Length: 214
Image (tube, rainbow, N blue to C red; front, side, top):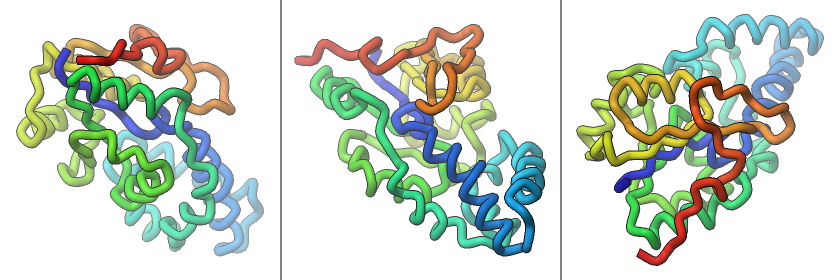
């Protein structure tokens, strides 16, 4: 194995921030803006969210700012104190480097979210490359994403590991030929464990911690 591709939200970072942001904080602010109760605002938003799942717009700060007439970037800053790293992530990334593996962050997150989270966590320094799906205009759920990734960040699919909390993303990567795939059992530490179906799941990064040293 030469290359390790790592998702960000739910994989390296606790998904609690995103869950709380989209299911609580945005409905509160949307309700205030548009004169709706929290319950009515949340119901309205859940329907909109569901329609956009799996699309590039779902991950776009700009899209939701325009759609909801809210400053989504500023709202994320308000909740930035909730951004947290999953246990053992920095050590895992350090061990990858010591073991001579190429570590690449591959995320669907919008650049605004990516930059905020990298500032808060300091994880960017551990990566050989950081890839944002918005630069390709296509999310990881689509098979074409992996070909575009390979053109800018060459990897041998048969010698590559992807860790991601999204089953559609893992299936897309599998169909492309990426050989080693791991899901995440608990992306959001405040929620129950996730059913990962056909994929082996990590309880923590201890499960695949390199021994280090070359």
